[in-house]
Length: 297
Image 1 (cartoon, rainbow, N blue to C red):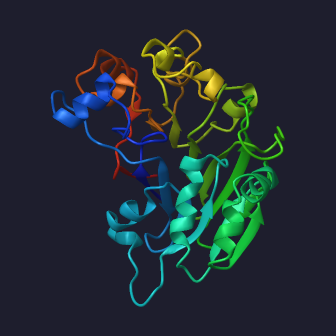
Image 2: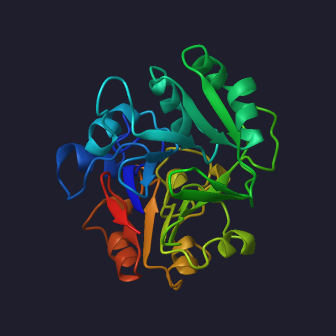
């Protein structure tokens, strides 16, 4: 199974267009070693021919063009077989509208996410005006074969983040995916948004070979301290990396071959390759995703 990181940044990308924080300044002026990043999304395949998209970033067109395996072979065909969504956030769904020229789209979401995309953002209703959309309901705990040698099991990721759109339903608002190569049995977990590593969420990591996990903020008060927001990372639905109960402390001891931070906010110092925070992460056996990173699982 191949996992291709199409985009590794959180919403807004890196640098973010309206941000002059130290990390954004550094990537713009080249004063410190760091690389620009597009908004978070991955593609997964077991044969390098047919691919499944996980989350549809607003940068999806650039991401497809940067990865030849996703280019059409002839006419207006695409190697993309389906799209799976972890939630209804705009940075994970706006790219669906850029796929409207396709002959059809197979979309996997929970009922709660579908409801938000219909009654909240109306994004799905707009998309259906351009191309046929086949909806497959994602039921946490159910094993689903995609018919490409790849299967998945979604799992619920509890959150109390305030909803901007939709009914505010709790169950199914955010999910992670455990992806399995049906031939080798090897698994990868995609978890770009997690507020708390509950025992149920941690259980889904058991036995996986690769984990791509929420690396949004280094510190819980990161954006507050920089004067960029009034909410903490946790209040925005993201477990910070640092701290006695942060993700680094909880995940670094786990016996997982590749543990990779993804969905990294533009303010996070781990984006700077010479930062002490980056060194700490790497010394603890964790990686920092870059656009174009490819993992053979």
